Image 1: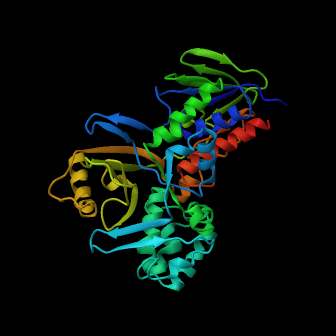
Image 2: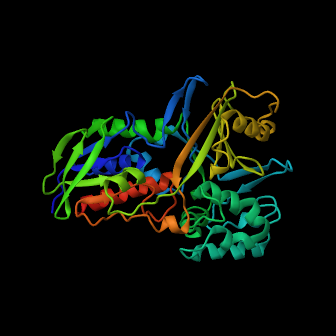
Image 3: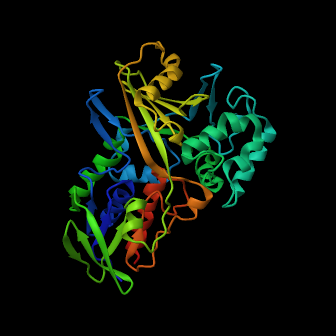
Length: 415
């Protein structure tokens, strides 16, 4: 059966990925987004405090994130990113120790076993014991599977898991980390190169997508809310869009790329995660642009990662329930004490700063909440579900969001 128009509800990365893939294949698409701008939780904006554009949050994309790279190429944004070498500096803010993980070109990361290229204190048997992660069951947590790996757990697995899953290791589902390892670390250094947007996430992942869609005749409706989805006899028959009713044809398809909470209210028959975790991002204006972009892993402090790009130095605090209710001044001061030495600045002289709190940044990626993720195919024949919170097989990341959009687009094309 041929596909008529596809209505994509939600202009985050999942929705943009679905719409752009459908557009590439010549399908008629309508994109509906409640907010006045697209991007969802991945966006850039002009901040009046810092007097420049910043991202609402930091997102680490790797060269092995195949769907993200495919998306950037499709929308003509490959030139807007920097792909860094597969090297990851780490710094312990308590001891002052620093080291660097360097990935080789081969698929087997032999260089990690070398004292000069690997994790301090990690032993060969710790790496061997880590293989249990690849067979983790749905009820097992990161701590249960990996806590027996000694310094490797403390110096790498624990901070890495917190950053990827945005959930404390004691409660985070280990099975969600396994596909990340298979698709990046186990593919060697060429799949582990950090990808940074030169100007910001919006300039790489959002603005080029909107331009691509517009140039290909997609009906884009920003600042318009879908208030309801009318279902009859097992299929979507109409959409309530800002009080107007859109009636669907027999071959039309709806891709919901809406947040979990919205879907839960609008479509109560669909199970959705109902517990969330916060992320706090802190952006410092360093005044002068950095000579080159940098990413540094942080241990022992408040944040997990430091991103330096242009004149802005940013940190990310994942699974941030322990700090999200604290004042912005308190958070910024504590973070600055940790990172000032790395930036060759005085801890006593904090620059202009902006603290951004996302209290529902991702769903809580625990075994129970992971079990609530709905599949892409729903019980409604012409309704597909996209979003990083759906059952993508990946954590709630940029790669997961984009992959979910691509999967739904593929299903719509084959309906």
